[in-house]
Image 1 (cartoon, rainbow, N blue to C red):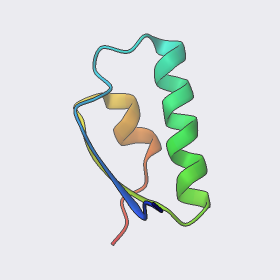
Image 2: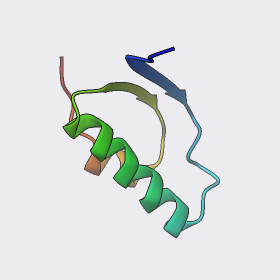
Image 3: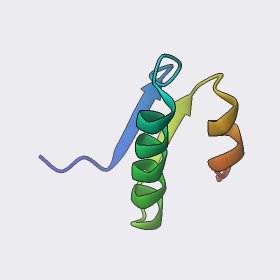
Length: 54
């Protein structure tokens, strides 16, 4: 099955800094590949690194 989109709800709040960075790098890579992810989070680094798109 090919997944075209990803929905993530509050999955990052308990991650250590290295694991959070790894996951953020992965989300950025997916974005550059044209994939979409809906993310709900209160982690400040995520709001700074993830662009808001339509």
